[in-house]
Length: 57
Length: 263
Image 1 (cartoon, rainbow over the protein chains, first blue to last red):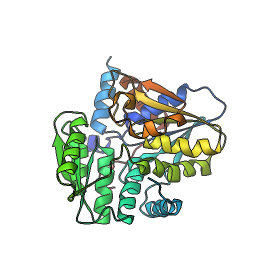
Image 2 (image 1 turned 120 degrees about the vertical axis):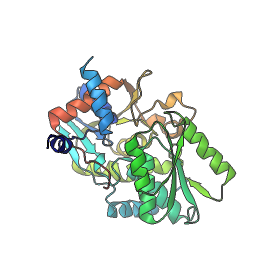
Image 3 (image 1 turned 90 degrees about the vertical axis):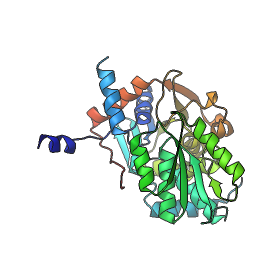
Image 4 (image 1 turned 45 degrees about the vertical axis):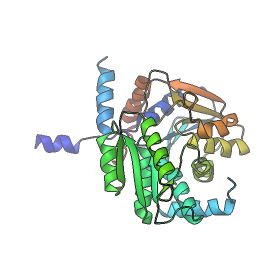
């Protein structure tokens, strides 16, 4: 049962290029609107691995 | 290559029939983001792939006796394989063996002939395709995404007008640079109409960020070279910053992406 719940709760991430676009967009100070793209879904296993690595640093 | 506007409008309307384009625009403060993973085949690359494939079909350059061949790190390959499968064409997608298992599985699902080349970079994949085209030109058709203007036109004709239709008072366009298709298409569209600044995003020297590359370090500068005057500034991001951005988007805005297997 626990395994089933954990499988069901797998979440999906935007890809790292979306993260990069978002970080740059957030750094711009302007009264006007900023347009960017979140190009794709991230590879879920790679995202989980990288985020764990970053959090443990 | 000079292509008539009416043909590109025709291709655009055909793309919309297949759920390619018309993706949601999500608001985070004064940042509006196109959620491109809502495209059929799961990424922004569906737009360019559809324009390139459909143009080749409409002009007779591609027929069903030829195999579409392309080197890719993932998203373009998936989009081409999906579109080829949808329209009844064969595809051969060449990716680095280091590409994710998820990518390989999706390519096989779309009936692509999957070729793996050594290493993590697409350099060997590109060389493989060049050799195939040189040795068997009658068998293969290459879309050549890095140098194909249709890659940029797809965004000039679809992504740009979609955004323009939804919001006003745009000051900045921020887009990652991979092949340069997205940023150059958007830049051409918006700079013709408004006073906007266009900012390109690339990985810093020590980082690998999937989908982005520094074209100025590559032998093939492709579309960026053709339209470099449209880009005002290029900023770098490192891998940790990019993944912290992913984390922010996930935790603060609760944005869930669709898994794109089977979509």
